[in-house]
Amino acid sequence: MFKIKNYQLYYLISFFNFFILEITGTSLILFILDKGYSLQKANLFMLVMFFLGLLLEIPTGIVADKLGRKFSTLAGLWIYVLYSFLFTYFHNFIILLLTQVLGSLALCLISGSMEAWIAENSEKNIETVFSTSNSIQYVAGIFCGIIGAYLASVSYVLPWIVSMIINIVLILFITVSVKEGRRTNSFDIEKKNSLLDFIKESYQFIRKNKYFLPLFFFVFFIGMSNSSANTFQQPRLVGLSGQGVWIMGYIKSGYSLFMVLGSVLVKKLTKKNSHIKILRLTCLMLGVWLILSGIFDSFYLVLLSFFMYEIGRGMYNPVIQIYTNSLVGDSNRATMLSVQSTFNQLGMCLGLLITGVISKNFIGIESDQTPIKISWIICGAFALIPLLFMKSKRSKE
Image (tube, rainbow, N blue to C red; front, side):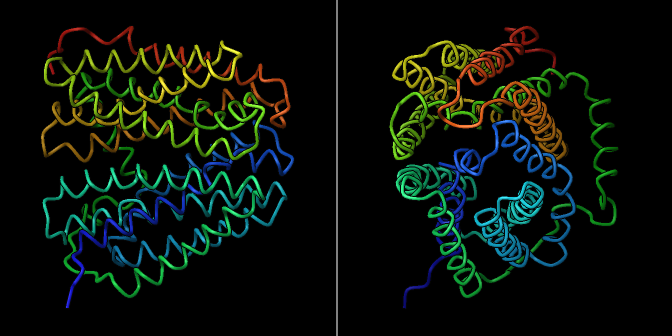
């Protein structure tokens, strides 16, 4: 009798978990606009979710360590079902704001739990497993982008209904098929049991390793840059196209492929170029093409510029991971990555706040796109700022 391996289970769970998130993500901002809110309010919802993600990351990690990876994942998925139901069928601003609390809690409970489970129980090399999982998620992104957009063109509610159904099926599947298995604590619960402890440790790490500050500022400004590019792409591109929501599915599939191209490009470039040079090229790709996406008014020119920007986004994750891991030893790696993630999310929050103020009068895809254009130009400039303090040669670290 065929027995499915743990890493094969992980591939299936990764596919459907990403599908659940992305099938609604294709039209999320348009759905918020359809509920009668401006882009400023949409940014506020995203801001609440990102900021709470910072606060809840450690407490939810403790839940996974104390009660198990499987429990944490299932709890997160059930809470995400509740979040999806409330967000779908309620229009009240306070309720929608509270749903972001549920959504953030759910994502924090899920995030890292299954990764920790497979790292502790995989029958296959873990680097290969994570690499394959990322490729599977790209494929999921292509399919659910098209499906989600077509469903949204009929009704913005439909992608959320499908997401909830798949979510419940995934819960049942994990309940039956996943065994908790071997478990090790990701950190000492007695020593790191609060956000305050994390802040203190992060401060000490930065103080002792000041030469990492340029890298932290790098991810901070890239986080600021990514904020409006992510939240404003749907109203910008659908509005300029003159087509229905369905077109966003093909656009999303297109830029998923361009992100893959960016990831492949990094592998090629690292053979003959320093990490610093590739980081500088990534800044240019993100900054220049996002600025041009804001300047142009033709749908096809904006689309082409945005696809080029997505190559930069595809380059960013692998090159920052490679560069970061080349600078830090095993003993400090977890702290380094946590601090880096914090700077990135703080940048996202600040970027959402700034561009939200700019876009307060944008209330639908028929609205004047000047606020989005200004936001993209400003965020493109944010991506270029790291070039001012990035040295062409490797520094003393």
